[in-house]
Amino acid sequence: MSNITIVECQRSIFRTIIFNFYAIILIPSLLCSLFIFYNCIQIPQLRNHPPNRVVLILLVFLFIQALFDIPFRMISLYQGKVPIQNEAFCRFWYLSNVIINIIGLHLMALCSIERYILVFHHRFFIRYRFYVSTVPILICIIYPTVWYITIENTSWWCTYKPDYSADGCGTPCFLTNSIFHLGFVILTHHLLPVFITVFFNLALMVVIFHKKAKMKRNNSWRKNFRMTSQLLSIAFFYLIVWLPHCIFASFPLFTKGSLSITGRLFTVEYFANLTPIFTCLCPFISLIALSHLHDKIKRGIEIYLTCWKKHTALIFPETNHVK
Image (tube, rainbow, N blue to C red; front, side, top):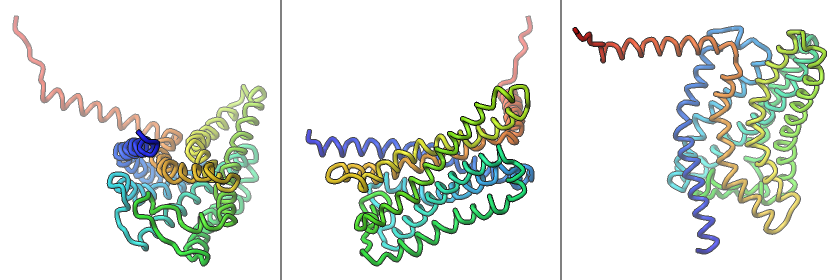
C-alpha cells in the first residue's frame, strides 16, 4: 500500500469520526444554548452578572456558527465536496466562519483580562465598566468583521478561486500568495489572543493560589475561585483546540519546503474540522459553570423522574397475589 493510499485512508477515517461526532452532539448543543438563552431572558441576575456577560456574548456567536457553519461542514464531510458549488457561497461561508472564529478568540482574550480585573480590582471594574468591558466588546466584534469584509474580501493581489473538493472551499489565495498578509493575520488574529488567554489565566491561577493561605478562612477566596473556574473551564477547552491550530498555521512563516506544506495540510484538513468541536461543547461547559441554573436543572430532573415513575406504574401496574 503506497503512502498516498495510507494518507487518504487516514483522512477518510478522520472525516468519518468528525462527521459522527457532529451528528451526535449538534442538536443537544443547540438545545443547550437555547436553554441558556431562555433563562438569561427570564432571570435578570443571570444576564446582568458581570462574569457572565462576555461568556454569553461568545455563546451567541457560537450558536450562530453551530446553526449555519456545521451543517454545511457535515454535508461536505459526508459527500466529499462543497454542498453549494458557487463562488458567492464559498466567500460567504469562509467570511462568516472566519469572522466568528476571530471574534471568539478576541472575546476569549478579553474575558481573561476582564476576569483578572474583576477578581482583583472589582471596584475599578464596576466604576469604569463601560470603558473596560463594553467598549472592548464592541471592538472585538467590529474590528474582525470590518477587516475580513473590506481587506480580505476585496483583496487586489490575487484572484479568489474556490476549491469545491476541499472543506470550506479550500484556503483563500490571500493566505497563500502574501507571506506578509499571512504573518499579520496569524500573529494578530490568532497567536496574540491565544497568548493573552494563556498569560492571564495562568496569572489568575498563580495569584489566587498564592493568596489562598491568607484567605483560607475567608469566603472571598471561595467566591474568587468559583468565578475563576468558570473561565478556566472554557479557556482550557478553547486552548486545546486553538493552540495546535495556531502552531501549525504559523509553519509557513518560520519554515520552508515540506514542513510548510505539512503545516498547511494539518491546518486545512484536520484542525479546520476540529475547531468547531469547541463550538458544540462550549454550551455544556458554560452550563456547568452557570451555578444559577444548577437548582433549576435538578428540579427538572426530579420532575422528569417522578413523571417517569408514574408513567411506568400505569403501564406495568403491580399485581396483588392472593395467598
